[in-house]
Image (tube, rainbow, N blue to C red):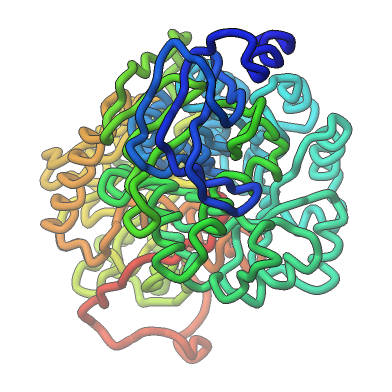
Length: 601
């Protein structure tokens, strides 16, 4: 809209497009709630008052507030394409989101980022991008791409690109690694924002990290940690995702003075939770239920992220602001009844009233490229009687490293079901290198069959855990044949599948269908004997070589504490192994829920 048109519309010189009447306006700028009518012309708010309009919408006493903004999330975690994500979250009040698409970037590089931009174009939901900072995450794995500062800089001219996403490599910042500084410099030169990712960082190291121009952090897990980062100038993103639920622990830090430097974000929210709990509306509702003043809770999902990301025409009800608005019943239930995106009624009573048809995009190339994969590659000749074991930990994604007596058959390493020592396999799928690595994992409890996934953070090679080589081979082959996804297999038969043809990460199906497929997959994993409430999620993090203690990539077994590749077999004697488990068969413990400490997602 031309500025002159907006000025004349605000003055009331002509009949505007829409008036919303009988509304209780929640003014997040002044902290007030009052009754008023709101005028809208084209996609902008012209102001409160008695305007002559072509159309009138009766709010019937509902609260009128700015649309909700998710300040940090990974759209790949929803497992659906942007248009389907919009269909799911807009009726729940989300009108804008800032995403870090580093999952698809690790697979497709710049093509993945362009795909997200193209597939988001023209949607009622505005999707902004922060460019991935760590592709690949480490040198100890094969990713589908490598992005340097010079690769990312040209994208900063796009209005939808706001800066650099979570800088996970905080040691690289602190120690002035040249490639890290190149990315930071490229973004800062163009006045872009830089988001942080620094779990547990404090003191002088935190000072150094912030000095690089990094403005936010979403990895705080305690009020003490958040308080130090607030004191030093960071914005705190309070995360409440599917597994990373930090809201309750961070509430003690909030007060009337610092809440304006905090925002509510989802980070990773999976289909089931979006359908059954909600999106940002769930976070606002949860914050209010746990004692956060209602307007403060709403500010953390509207005004605060808008100001941090310099989206000054959003997150508020004010003249000239974009008319992204929600109508909800009350602050106790916080049920969104109607949603306006750019001045247009977009959703009502939990349903879209306009289509979210995706823009046509070029067909993405196949991202599952496996060369020379045979069952023989799963066979590992025993070198000693002992192996290093990746032990899944209850209620977290940290693993423990243990040394266990291996089960050897005919000179080869095999799974030991009775002791829950199962084969773990990573197959490179990006560059047809033929890399296949084998390890041993404890904690899954499978009694038969195998699970496999092309979602394995952050490089997303194929990862599988199973009882027999035959079922592992069939599971990996099924992922290849689908072009990516999740499967459960037993006796060579596929029990369940979740096809993810978009980069092996996202589906072409609806959120409801993906959720149903995931339910069937979890049931299948349970029938195979899984001891984990979220076995596919657990599996997806076992290839992430930045979270201690032991991981498996296509390059081999990674000792994260020492940051190097180590041999699977332990060259030692029993007397040298004080932590050796020689107790024989044990019933595996049943871990609880994860607490996600990785910011890679």
